[in-house]
Image 1: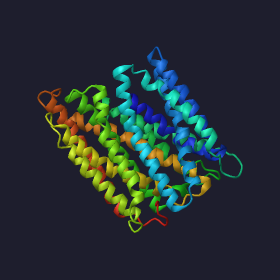
Image 2: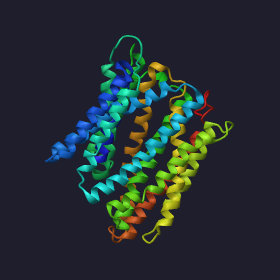
Image 3: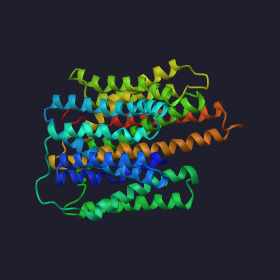
Image 4: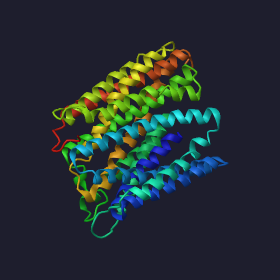
Length: 416
């Protein structure tokens, strides 16, 4: 549940963080967010009681919501040449994708040989290095015009997204028809409808509707949401399988994700080497289809599966999703006005992060329902059947995303 809370904090505040970056300066927001993230990590890592730990984790989500969109916005505004932007997005996609896997690997090492606290405290020296590079290398930029905040929009968006994610997370423990799940779900949807109405009427909206009222970008965000749900859920259930069924140690489980990282590197960096006639739409469809095939391969696991099955399936998933998600980032930022780059980057981050939170919750409910039908729900075969059902559903999400991508019109500019 702690992961869901971090997702909720990050997703709920991303739009606000993106707008702050646009108005006050993207480098300033990036640096301030990094400093806050380091302090929050130190608080969580040194916490001596659960409340301080939760406070630190929540603060990590909040501060991450400021530096994540600012970083992507600076990337967008710094690289205007088509080929250079393609390479930049490829490196960005590779870094983001492999960074998550690297976190699992180093998390396993730290848990095995040090303490879980170092999984949080390690962020402090890493941020220190990033801050030195950011201060020396990055150039600041912000939107022109007066600084005005759309407070009603900020409140409705933040509360609406947070309420929806909380509702989905509560559905795991309480059920979909529980008053808490239903109440927060309905409240979240109502707040987001109100948010759209406010943005439509506001002279200075937090998120100008032109950012999403674009056929290519709009479809890209839908695909980003669905693919994020499938990928984050795959990370979770593969971890469960390795530790609960195969009884891997934390270190072994972390190292078992290396093939996924290799696949993401191949997919994200490889698209820049494809011939120019291969369109972003083709890359997106192909990448999602390949990712769905690999996810279906993960669904064939049983308690006695050898690592070769996981190795091949992870390589295929990583290659396909690495190419697809890198292309999606470019599509969702296509033709965005420079003054909207922060909020557009925030929305790109938000759809993926929220999709991840929703995907984890929904597929966890599915896995538990499948497992509960077994005679012994805690046995290795029962657990594996639940995880396999989640992987198969994830494959379906990626396949459905590829179908949506089929109808995405050709972007006016390519991410290459």
